[in-house]
Image (cartoon, rainbow, N blue to C red; front, side, top):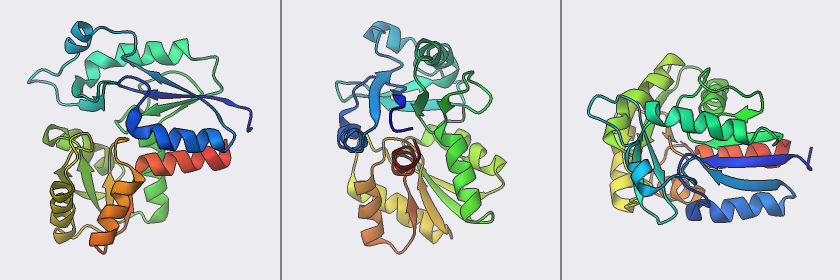
Length: 223
């Protein structure tokens, strides 16, 4: 399957500079990768209309090509994601670069969903772990925790954005979760990198899982 055409789709804009080195590694491994963004064809004014309202309980966080972090209402963004999936249906695989819960919400048999993969992966490691979840923003606590609690995990949450990366702030979040009894840390956003994972592991004696690293390893070795 090494000749499979794979679309890598961020919910922000492509290309993602923070993922550039990982994309190069996939291409060097012989994969036919093309990057797309759900917001690529939208103006800044149109993107601003997708901002969450105070009543939104499911917020997504991503990057624009300018390097600016943006918060998006998942409910408002869903039609744009689905259209992007439809427009890219000629690709053999479409990897949606977001760890939000999209199970049973998008159509397309060739769509790879990180949230579905990650919950099953961690369940396969051990079904009764206490998970320490780190997401970009505090407003995401309910949606991130709900996803993992539905998979029957005990969870704790802390926020520290990879897009406004501050090493000390992230380490404090990780330490807080470890102190609460977390057996494993999951950096629950595609913005977290393998280098961030290693930084935490160098300081704390706790396993760390990064969805981007796990997903890219899968498609490199399997697709």
